Amino acid sequence: ASHGPRLLPFWPQTYDSTSVPETVHSRRDAAVFKTYTVGNKGRVLATGLSVGDKAASGRLCLVESVKDIDKFVDNSILITEATDPDWVPIMKRAAAIITDHGGRTSHAAIVSRELGVPAIVGTGNSTYVLHSGQDVTVSCAEGDTGFVYEGISDITTKTVDLSGLRQARTKVMLNLANPAAAYRWWRLPTDGIGLARVEFVVSNAIQVHPMALVHHDQLKDEDSKREITRLTAGYENKPDYFVDKLSHGLAALCAAVYPKPAIIRMSDFKTNEYAGLIGGAEFELKEDNPMIGFRGASRYYSPRYKEGFALECRAVKRLREEIGFTNAIVMIPFCRTIGEAKKVLEVMAENGLRRGDNGLQVYVMCEIPSNVILAAHFTEHFDGFSIGSNDLTQLTLGIDRDSGELANLFDEQDEAVKWMIAQVISVARNKGCKIGLCGQAPSNHPEFAKFLVDAGIDSISVSPDSFVAVKRHVIASEQA
Image 1: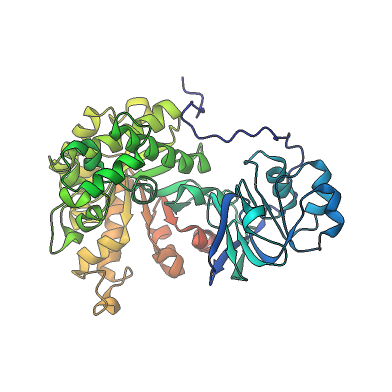
Image 2: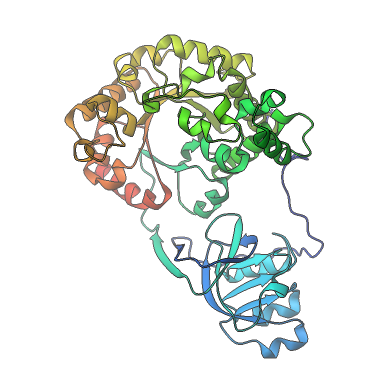
């Protein structure tokens, strides 16, 4: 029996000889929190591990020893090698804290977290490269990495008020891609992740085309070969690098909402986007219209990409069965036909992801008119639908969604698009199949959220900054 996720030796952890027990939790009002955005950034002066999710600007004050704390200027940014309990009085007076040493469990990290003060720990050399009197901006609002920027940047805050957000019949979920940013939104009373995009992890953490890892020795581009060798240092088998990085990235997303569901959409790059990955140009077609070209499900069983998709499957299998995040649901994008659905499910099963085994659910994106027209047949092969309103709109109305000339015609609320959405919701409900929508329309248009609720949709998934507004729209629609 599974007892939930567990840390394995390959799980990234930070150990710190200066760690202290965390005995005091922040007393922040759980119903209200702020999000921070840093603009007009100066040059990066230092980086380290970010603690918290705030940002602050001010003048640096370097304090080398606890004996010198009387030199500290209130509301300046404290910079020092490391802290211990004797430093707490000065830490309370700091606008932000920067240390050379320490990890996420160090004294500086734990105390700054309790105080609600942004901190960047483990910078390595800040006390050498920064100096007292320097104006800087400390940003912990950009994920795992904290940045010290030169000068006073523009910091904007947005207050998020969660009061009065009761449970609704219609689930409201999050669209997330960046594992490092997932924990910024843990306070949101979300019903899970409705869309986790594999592409972000591949582009940012992996950077290499999966087929270039499988066929590294056959690569013709020597620069790509060298770069792949550098990135995969320490991996005897290069495809293991892809599996390792992808499973870790997805685990961070699943952990943010566990045990609620996290719907992971398998890769949906277009050919031109795949070609931009390291080594990718040797494996991709040049297409005139990649938007409706070799993308999504059609790649997964094709000899051109089947081995790459096998690595994606291995990563999800490890995520669910070894790391233990059984809340992960797999979703297949751009699946054009029933025959294609069968082929993809066969390939997944060959790679250890058989629908139904160990509770594995497989969803499909509903973003092509054929998905709506043959919805009843698709329900025989999948456990749920997620309506991709962008592609469904462009393919229903025959509009290139990237065309500026036709932008005024691109409308998710067009009657034809709404008919398609209402139709597939009706079929899914009749067949007992879950159905949701991931897109921005419900956040931009309260009346569209009401339309979805009235149609009987199970869930709506939106970007985190739209969550509260959409949740309020949903609650109001259900009460109407």
